[in-house]
Structures are given as structure tokens and as C-alpha cells.
Length: 403
Image (cartoon, rainbow, N blue to C red; front, top):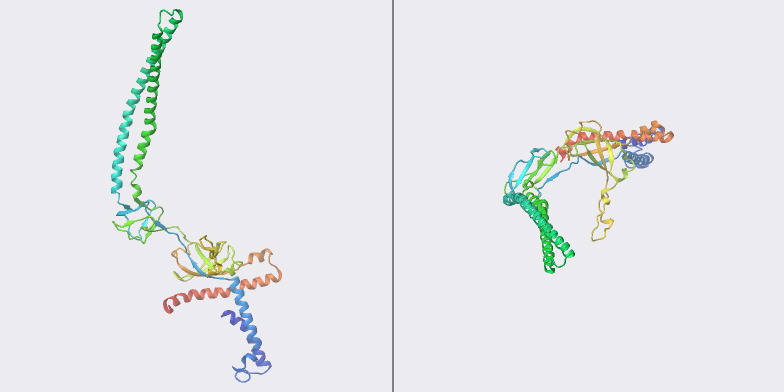
């Protein structure tokens, strides 16, 4: 409407004044409803062309955000295993701190397994204590076997020396008997050493592994679900006896306190892509905070359009099947701290962006005629600023009355 009024002031009005005062034509006499187009054809045509050009320029360099929202992330309240709820420690909408218990699953079977595991641990510990005595006995047997082996080997060497000096003193049967005794004593000694190594390996590796396995079975703490971050528990209607499944049936939702605080996202039409820059001023107004204009700046722009994402499947995709063309997503942050604290996350808002190339003009990057047109285009943002404030005023009326 503002663009149309401005265009009429410099097109239709001068045309009418020329025909009224220069040609002497009057409305209702020479200028009637039936011949108005013919009489004011230049003014009407110029007004239409200028109004369309102004609207195009203003909404291109000062684009409107089709939707603005304050996103936030949620965390599903899940258990690490399926089971029935035994105890519930919080209620819906309660504030929890990181580490607070939310609910506990039934652990009757786990407790029985834990009792069995504790008994296994006691048995393993008793076996470890008894194994130290077995090691001492095995070491003594090794020493005895070694002493017997050395004694028999020395006897064999002495008899062999005597036989070399006088063959008639030592018989061949005695030497064979002593050789067999040495072989037997050596085998006994090797067996005693092998038994000692087996007991030591059992004490150092097998029994500790059995104890660690038994201790792992006693971890019932996984049945108690705790909060990972500070936040509020919502959609939480869990009662004792309910079945919880980490895949099919989560217990509720945890909304963290700090997720998305003060950050907004806005979507613009794709044609506004060349205009949207980091640091660009954006004004928003939200239904959760009526009659308020909140200045924001663009902190980041998403480099892709979500409508073009591709996921491999078993059928070829046709681009004509995509009905929505997609929009450009930007991230906003408030200019002043505290202006968005009373806006709850997820609120729906509308916004308007304004181009401001004052720094380029001040630094000399834009000069001459381009500087003049740039100043005019930037100044046209006043029309959108008025429209933005009109939306902020009529938003409560439209929402409460006309809806």
C-alpha cells in the first residue's frame, strides 16, 4: 500500500493536475469513470510499472522471513535394557540435575544373578587363598624332584668313571639301571615344574578372569536411569509396572536448560540468497511476546537447501516429485542480551531483514551513481520497517479476534 501511494504521488497525481489545470478537464465532467483509463492512461501505466518495480526492489533487498522459530533439542529418556518399572523418582515437568535418578527398572532376576555371582567371587577368593598353599607344595615337590634327579645323575657319573678305570667292578646291568633311574628322575622333575607353572598360571590369569567375570554380573546400577544434563522432564507419565523398551517405547523427554537459548532460525525464499549476509540486521516479532520488535543479526547461513537432500533407495528419484522448492535457512542471534530470555523455545515468529551497505559506501567501495542508488535502496527499508511494526500491532488482534 505504501509503495502504491508513493507511486501514485509521482505518476497519477501529476497527470491529473496537468489535465485539470492545463487542459481544464474536471472529474465528473470531462474525466468520468468510463473514460478515466483513456484520460489518465499515462499516469496509471506509470504508476503500475513504478509500484511493481518498487515492491520488487524493496522485497528483494529487504526480504521477509516466511517463518522464524527458536529451536531446541530434546533428549529421550531411555533405559539401556527393556524391563518393567519398579520405582519412579520424578514427576512430569520436574527440574532435574545431571546425575539425578529418574526411574528404576525391576531387578529381581539381576539380583538373583548378582547373589550367584557374589558366591562365585567368594569361591574364587577362597580358591586363590588355597592356591598359595598349592604353590608352596608344588615348589617343595620341584625341589625334591630336583634333588632326587641330581643325586641319581651323580651316582651314574661316579659309576661310569669307575667302569672306565676297571670294567670288572661295575656291571653293565647296574649302569643301565642307573641310566633308567636318571631318566625317570628327570621326568619327575619336569612334571613337578609343569605342575608349578600350571598352578601359577591359574592363580595369575584364570582365577582373576573368573573373578572379573563374576563382578561384571553384579552391575545392577544400569537398571537406574539418570539424567545426563540439567533440564526439565516432560511427557513423563511413567508409573510402576509400566513396560519400557529402549527401541519402541521411551519413558519420556528431557528438555535441556541451555539448548537453543537465545538462538533463532529463520527461513527466507531462495531468491533472497544473494542479499543475505552475515551480520545483516533482522527484526522479528513473536506471538509469545506481542507488541515487541526484537532486533537480531544473522550469525550464520546454512550453505545448502534442505529440499535438495538425497537419500539412496531402491527407486530412481524424479525432481518433479518434489513439491516444495525449499528455502534458505539462517541462524539469528539477538543484538542486545536479555531481549529473548522471556521467549520460550519453539515460539513462532515473523521477521524482516534489512540491507545496510553503509560500511561499503563509507570505505569507498561503492561510489558515484551506484552510491546514490544504493542509498535509495537501503532507505526503502523504512517501508518494511513500518510494515513490521504494523504486523506487531495487529498480531494480537488477528490472533484473538479474527481467528
